[in-house]
Length: 200
Image (cartoon, rainbow, N blue to C red; front, top):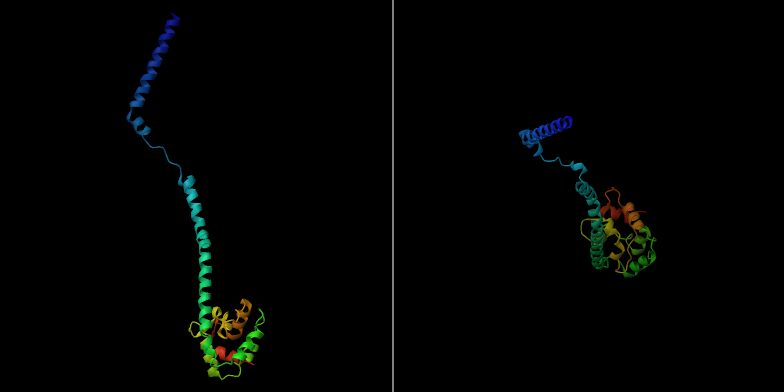
């Protein structure tokens, strides 16, 4: 009898548990809670987002790397144009200077690093010219006709006197500019050039 009584108790308990479960599952509160979407991961921990942000940080550097060859090409193209303009101005100087004096002055500064503006001006005949004629020479050297000789033009100044004149080195160009640029604006004006030519 005890065995049968125990079995009845167990079956009754099981049925009670099943009844409670059915009530729980079919209740509106359970249905609403189970239909809620699972929470998404935070954007800060989402790996694709992190990767995109890291790639965005490197984009300015990539753009700078791509711009460097273009910038170098633009600089070379500008130098070519200035060099060609300077050569075309050469004929104008022959109205004021002698061919022998020009050749003598260019031979004296043929070696890189040997350019000295005072020595060159004296040999080429500029120092003996009147201020007005010196200013006319300045206008012939001013390749872009801006009224100033900028550092980029100064680099090709010897080509104004002869097509085979060499380019000045960066050090020679800067020394020439510093000697003439009295007002410190980074370029040589027509009056500054005349003063430099006749400077003792």
